[in-house]
Structure formats: C-alpha cells, structure tokens
Length: 134
Image (cartoon, rainbow, N blue to C red; front, side, top):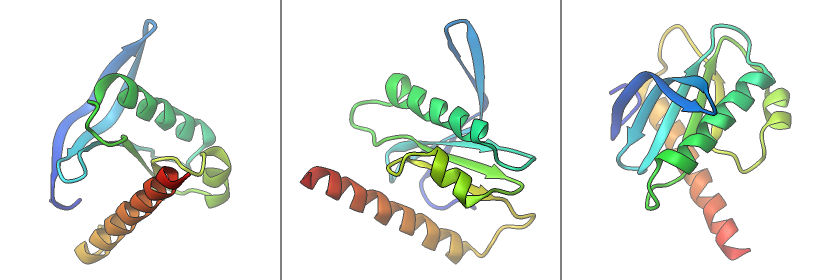
C-alpha cells in the first residue's frame, strides 16, 4: 500500500541459482500496472559499486530467465543508508532501470511517492520513445 497502486508481493529473500552459486534478492514485487518485476535490495551501509553491480546482475537474470515476453523490463531499487550520486552515475549505464536512494526512518508523504513514481514512468516512456525513433 505504501508503494502505490498495483504492487504485488512475490517473495522475500528470493533465491535463484546460477552456475552452482545461490543469490538472494531481498524483495521481489510485481507491479500489475507497469507489468514488470520490481526488485528491492536493502543495504544497511553506504552504497558501493559492488552493490550496483549485484543489482544489475539480478535485473539481467530476471529479464532473461523470469519475465515473459509481453512484460516490461525489470526495475531494480537499491535502498541504502547513504549514497554518492557521482558513484551511481559512473557505475550504471544511462539507460538502466536501476535506481538508488538513501532510505529515511519514516516514509515521506504519499503524494511525494506517487509523484516520484510518475516521474520514473515518464522518464522510462520518454526513453522508450527515443529508442524507437533511433
């Protein structure tokens, strides 16, 4: 309810295996309105480039092995104690579906969350339109 309309909870500490290694995604959600998976990883310390790479691997795995053809690309969200924007921009490609944010001890106003989600959707749609035109 706090994240907005259309979110469905799928799993906590969702395990997937790849080449004898086990990996665990903290939260796996699905958004019916966006028709995509949303992966959330919670970090208790400062965000590192390793955390970003790990989420990129999770997103790639879901896009390649879990999502169906009609579904939109997986979104990854990293919530951490603190982050440096320059590190995030340098580590992730410009067209990524991965977002990092420092968490707060209390949630912001519901309208602020809705505004931010709408902004992300608009950015995604603009990006898709630009990709279509090129």
